[in-house]
Length: 122
Image 1 (tube, rainbow, N blue to C red):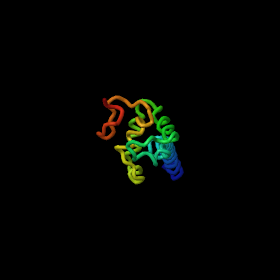
Image 2: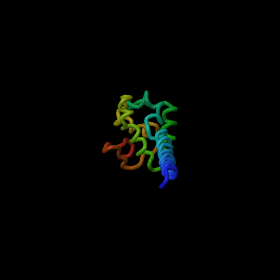
Image 3: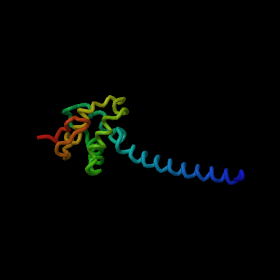
Image 4: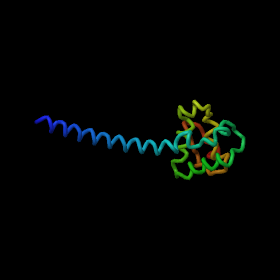
């Protein structure tokens, strides 16, 4: 094998690896916008209160998250139990109750990291 063909093959491999990495980054970036605490920033003032009525903008963010389908509660759970949420001082036990406090339906027997989600249990 001559030097040019080795270089050409190496460049081909690098291009394949680069395109694969780009796809992974784009998918992760899309997920990051909704399933992180950054998807519910308007809730940060209300999130640690067990009883306060959340703001309309907070409930709008929760509603947008919840309209994501059956995995929406999993997404919220991921967001409020993340390391980033902990750094913001988020109390997960209170935070998982946001959909219920906003008047949104909560799946029956919903749990988040073994915590019962308010509104999902009789």
